[in-house]
Length: 575
Image (cartoon, rainbow, N blue to C red; front, side, top):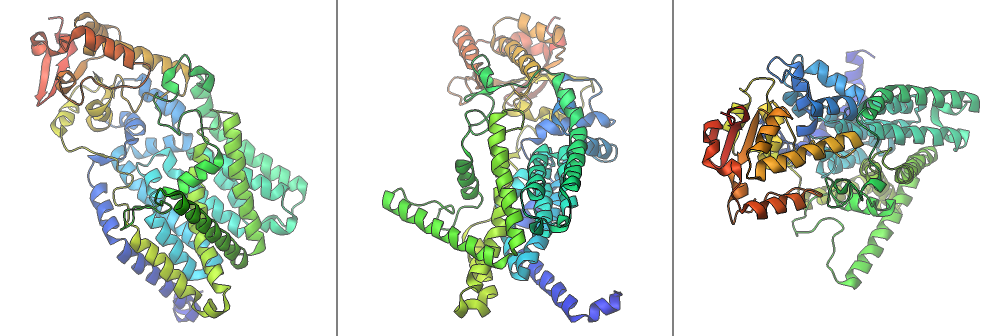
């Protein structure tokens, strides 16, 4: 169709006007959030905490980046970063600052997510449900929070949304493509998309299989095997590289390595024991939206038992009505294919628990699917529910939009979601570190100021909290060895552990935060997770705050002073 014909096509013009109206309404509702995002993306000192793990390894591909090989950055490049993510940043780092890429990429992915969800919802309920889906997506606390930073997980929602859209449209080949792309960027997508594809082709009657309606089982198996083979080949390099850092850390290792369990490196929910899938669904759904003008989150109710019971009954009744509305609004084949995706999520969660830790953290399977189901099923189900009531049928669109708009207005947006670190002080320190020789290695207490050194100072770190992972046995043991040596050097009274940091471990500079040694300071004694707490407290009691790094003997080695911060050149201590 030519441009002139398209313009004069009333149906096309109507659709275009609806799209423009939706964009305008969303812009008005969320203009404050958009303005906050614009400010955040321009400031390198405002970022997501996890960029400190994934982005610094790519500085080595820039002229002013670290010049030496580094154990930690090699680990992240080889064993942690999926092959597609790594290739993208290696290419981009040749032209742009990786920090800038990590700032812009989430918004490109966010836009693709919104377009995908909008098209999918429009397919099921037209402009009305499209608006409702996009409004709920923009309001959610989950989506951009998981996408900020341009990390492997940033690809999770966009790729799964494309897989969900393929399921709705019945595009089996497209589902297979998402399965393979998941292996390149975020393997969790591969598990869910691949299982969904298998269930649709092997479990559902042929009339529900979309474009595979006429496929024989032989062709279905061939397509599944091809998809599985390509996915495995894509993921294999990362798996092989990971094996060079030791076997995976298991739940049975927690007794000897407390850093892998509760009280260790990871928060509850990311470390064993894990919750069952029902608990994960409830937690994910209730945490998806913000605090209301009344100070409550959606789903929060007063503590009184009778109120809680009535609220639970009311929510359950509403859920049943919405699901009935979705069934009436959506084609039967779509409903069954989506049911296969829900089933795939449950199976993936169960299998991940059984095969822990080889299919990653079980809760992530719910974290990445429940929000997508919610923003599609609720608007379509709500519209279908209202439209099924004869007196309200003609006003179904108006009522649906009104209800969603009221929800959006009542529950505040999340302007800062995803940007979890805002560095207001010590900026001169990071600028100074960036001027040190490219092969420099910096050590310091892993938490706090030191955690930002690789990202903002662009130099390799001996150890940081963010990079202290406990996924592979060899890497975990190396981090334990480094932390033990650092505690002795940082908190001890003897100069020898400091000299050992330089001679044995290749550390050039030590960052000292004097607040760790001031009585009454909230940072005294410095905190770290199990099993290092005992060693820390023992040294603190032994030295009574008289650590060597606080003596005047280190003054000749100090090359930077900034308030409570001291940067020592360890090579000068021997002199």
